[in-house]
Length: 437
Image (tube, one colour):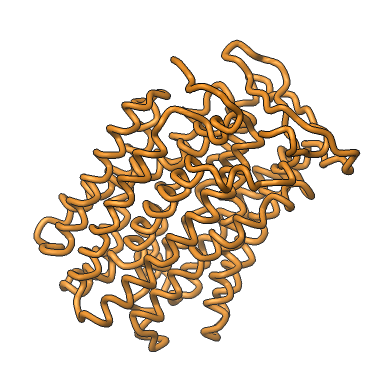
């Protein structure tokens, strides 16, 4: 941070005692389950939604694009909300918004389905920004492990909802609208778990005269308080930093591939005469190799740039194999293609989240980089579901859309290798040298 960037005085919050770290970690990870679950629940019944509402593939792709677009737009407005409410209390508020969006989708008008999906996306967007900052704040010495577990939670949530939505629909006979709303129950449970922790944190203090703040990062043996507080008022330096754009680009492009698959893989498999229940299960199944890869990737890298670069290459190759397999022979060997694709996507999301934490020197810059990476990144990703639906309408099959995803892997590789370099954002602007291990 330059001397010209100023913030309000820092609020010092004691690091949670060791005995409470596990409890705080569980609360954050259960919260993370809600950040993908309700979005993925719509995918297995998207064909039925089209039949009931008359939506074309392009329009259905737009419905799948709405939450991802909101992820990008509302990530960019999160910093002033953090200054107003504090990170923990704002996270609790996001769960209220997510629950409201899920409930709104139950209403019969088609506009309510789109509006509820947008409200849901707003809440998830803010949660996406908050969790990496909270990991940096509360788990400074265990960031790699917590990032891996966080990535796993992002896979477990969609795996559960994608795999169980169709069986729940058949078992209850409620119809697709009430069935996808059932996943709001977990958000309500999560609010109960998070509320005691969030409400026990001090509320943000009123702004005082501005003064420059020098970023500080705790050493490996530090056990005292961690400095947290509002974000810097000026962001121009970060937004012109090449490393920050590499992190944002990688986040966005890998998310484009992921959300395109979540939106359309079940429909693709149904088009090749697989049942809706089996197609939903296949999407759910792909999350299992994904979560394994997401958990192991940070442990394999362990802060080493060459290993991170190698993992970027491996993830890109795996995704390419999966996309080509789904394009040319989707139901011939679906378990093979979705195992390989799941491994690649798991590595990608773990790397993307890890870059946000690793390339920022402190909790302030983590929140700022998270805002930029997820704001710009999800705006990029929002083109995926809509674009694939439009390509399907134009081409009449799913081969062209899946091969188009393969072409996206080239910029994914470039931005991933750039983000894997071992330095912090704004490091050159401060005149800092590369860090040594």
